[in-house]
Length: 387
Ligand code: LLP
Image (cartoon, rainbow, N blue to C red; front, top):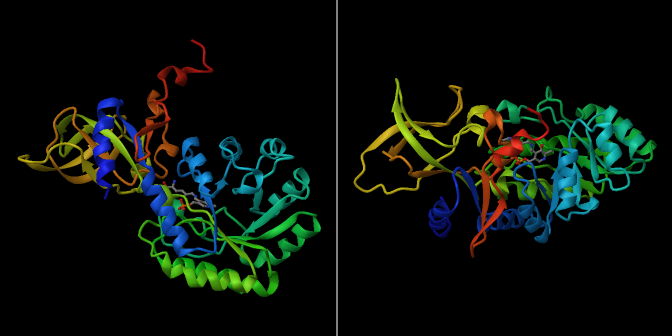
């Protein structure tokens, strides 16, 4: 459900801006942050900026006291650009290239070590850096396979049995060991997955603890009852004598964002289609993860017949479907609809495939629209090439 004021503002934006565009409701982001802070009043939050990395958004979240979680050199530099300092940025990921390590020397963020090799490389390039060690909990994790980073077969972190030895190595190499990191996966909606994950850390305590920090990652699905995690998290932190860090991405921004697209036409093959000016290049989640995003018509419903449609984008791929079997009042050419829950991993994963510029991004501040990022000019897609 969208806030009614935001929904009215979308109609106004449709008169002013070219489609497709992303629009975000800042009030909704703040409300989600309030829910997180209420559930985990003892935690320090690092926003996973991969979910939506617009500088205008990062600057605002920083002003509210959040840190940033980054997974590439580009993301670390982006966090710095928006004003975060090195001690407010957590740097994750299995691959930290020599280029990245060299570039960050002297201004290194808080580094999450992901393997034995990573320990050696970081100690070589960034002596004395403040580090955490990522534990791969080797759990089944209920989510789409692409998002289940905490499975034993995934490329992330270090299996529990290797953790105590590596902690010793980290200390021997002169790195500043802050504590352990755990990220189970993304879009998790079952409390049990988190409890099992915390259980793995619990079992490691006799060989590892105490530590200053337990970073328990992100992954909070939109329907996850956060309150159920409060006590378990608190007692884990108490056991280790640690401060809890969390890295939410989706939970903060997914529901705040919509992708607005215009209907170019209708057509029928063996199925009925609404043809849209946005598709997989703007929002790849349905094609990549089979994600289902609710659809909200932004045109009058009264007196309209309804139909069941697939929403197809402009790409030359049969998989370019933003939603399947949606019941809609039959739209007319030029009318618009909103694809909901698109604020996380929508714009940030958009592509320029098929020479498609990435969409405009707008923020509704409550008082008006602010352009977070202009629509990519088509000419920019040719940059660096010669005819
Ligand atoms: N921390 C780490 C180490 C992560 O890898 C991630 C997400 C997060 C935090 C934030 O997770 P969140 O709270 O947003 O679930 N592109 C996918 C999601 C990939 C998530 C990757 N890592 C999607 O569109 O669903």
